[in-house]
Image (cartoon, rainbow, N blue to C red; front, top):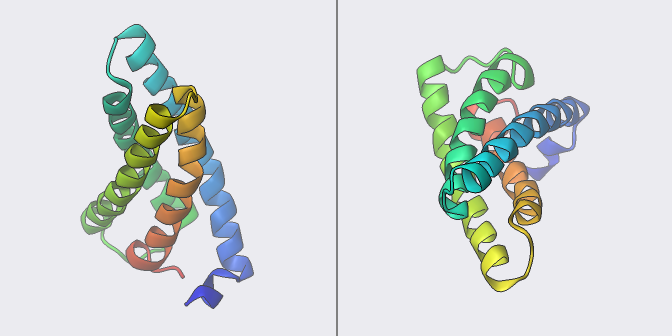
Length: 134
């Protein structure tokens, strides 16, 4: 199965995914900052909420550009995308909590580091299970 990820077509999907992920991540980071700094929301709760918002936008862009041509229905695709996002959310919130609790790392730096691990896991899940492109 791992061999399937090392193809040019999958590489371009990963590039497109990285572009989309970066854009929605920056939006999510802005929302996170606003909730924590401006609204006084707990950083862990704000991380979860901004993550869900970002991933809903990511689904639309993923379906139309990253994994264009999928035969999965919109509703079931979104349900699977959100299920995969919950895996990403668990990774994100857990690692974020560990880094902000046990290190002096600033919460925004921790969120950036955590996004790399969660993003790769979610790409793999969506490419194979949801959109069935790999």
